[in-house]
Length: 405
Image (cartoon, rainbow, N blue to C red; front, side, top):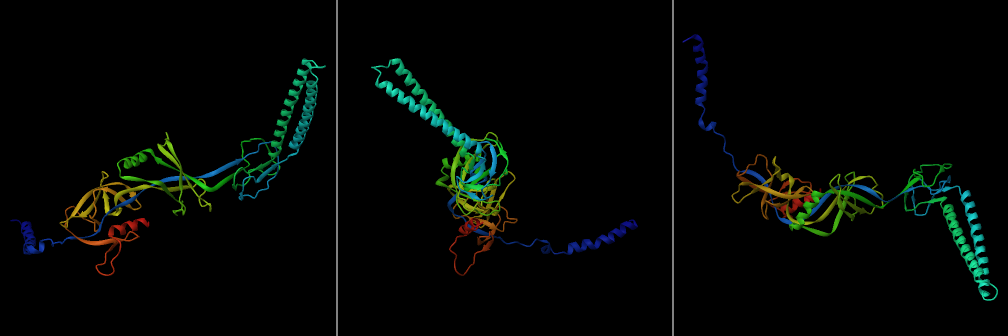
């Protein structure tokens, strides 16, 4: 034996002795009891079927103000940014030319009227003596002269009406009630009839429209739920809107025009919803979120944080079986309501759903259950064993907590 081998043997010998000296009981893992989990009892109920869609506000009425006659702007009498009723004068155009045209048209009408009266008198006189001293040809000529005079009168009256319209159009009025914008022109500017550039814009804000879009595929899935008897539609669609700040708008809307055409570029169907807007909290162009409650469905609501989703998209949860063991179940849902899944298959009335203690929980694990509730903030709390009983079941408490968010 070499000296190195002798040294190694002396060093390793104590370790072997120490290892063998450790008692077998000390090496064994300590025994663990049932895993403690918090559960709620689920129950089937009528669950609102809610669809949330992006939308954009659109003015109820909006008019670009343009001149209909040519001339120089002489005044802008309205207050900028103020509400104006229909018929309010916004701009005036120099009327001198149109007043002269109107006066000339009035003179033409008077002249034509006199010619008609003369022709009528001649025709009446010839008609009385046609069998005495007037030939049939003369009578027919007088009738033709009368008809021509009447036609000239109508033409003159039409010219007078046109002159009156042009004169009236030198005062440019608001065609609608609404808020008038800052003018895009100034006094002294020469404007032309029906020009491209608007002088200003008047917008009616109350009520207001919100246009939303839904994919045709989602609409078809909703129809399938109705045909399958899962979804029962309401007689009226309840509609609410959330503002850009996340604040809920305090007034409900009304569905106005559901479209029947699918966009060939986006694959969506457009809807228009009308809201009262007396405080002008919604302005045209704003992006909003519209929530529509289409109906109700028989389903079970469960907190989303009590579930997990596999890589293939399968949604699962744990329930506690009769043998006090955790059972993993696969869930079928048709969307969510606030922060809860709407479960249509995989759970039944009275099942104990595990909502707390899910960490490291495995299928078939022995568990010890504790009844819990979920408050309005979504916090899991243990149900008191003594004291005043609560009127909410755990499932109802979970639903009310979710509905408040």
